[in-house]
Image 1 (cartoon, rainbow, N blue to C red):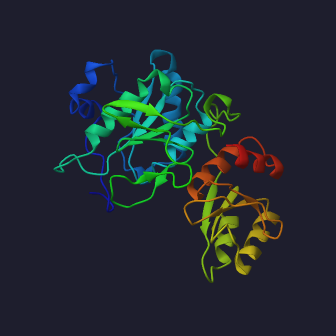
Image 2: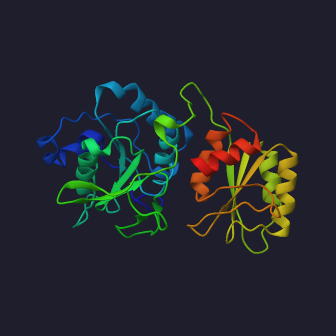
Image 3: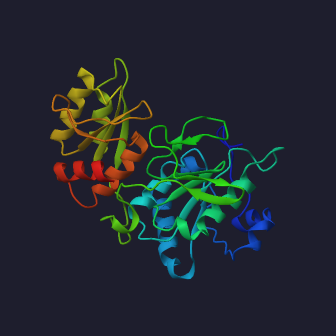
Length: 301
């Protein structure tokens, strides 16, 4: 273990050798990009993975990316916003180590490849496949620290399931993604800097001072309830806005929509959780600082 979680221990080629069944229905090439704990992933790795998909786009019918579970609701969403692909892009992971009696990694990998190889998977955006579930990168998030059935979309549900080794799709996502997305960061070296400030009783104003001092481009406020703002945070948000920082209110509850409210400061994250809202704001700021347009992005992406 590393930092209380599972550490990446084997290469992509070694991982493939653990699931010989993969060779029975498709040809797979393994590309080793990174081998690090997902808590240490960031914009550099997001862009590296996205670039690898684009650079190899014409060579393959689909892509499977293995990733740690701790931040598995973040990287796929970045690709969902930025990768120009109608071909399946599927993330998968493991909740149990390879040495466990009932390791879930091999089956998750097999099912992810099965989904990526299915013609019906095209055009559905970036997906996350674990524990027989097919989730949309826009909606799924980790909901339990240790259980196998941790990646869920409490309000929206799954795109489908894997039954008897075959994907069975049930829904599509109407939110804009992949080919229809206006975002293109392929030539961008550094993404805008966005931080998350957590709201709670008696939360201090000085967190906003720190964001201003460190020249943040944006702030996601993870508010209570439907993104409610305390008096202290309202004062901090006002100072941040005066400093030119774009502020978006999300909810720390884990699900539901933050509705527009003129009595509260900042834009709203719609149904995005704080981590995903951060990624969308970072991406949006590569295009504009117009609050109305950014707000439109949050309602459509």
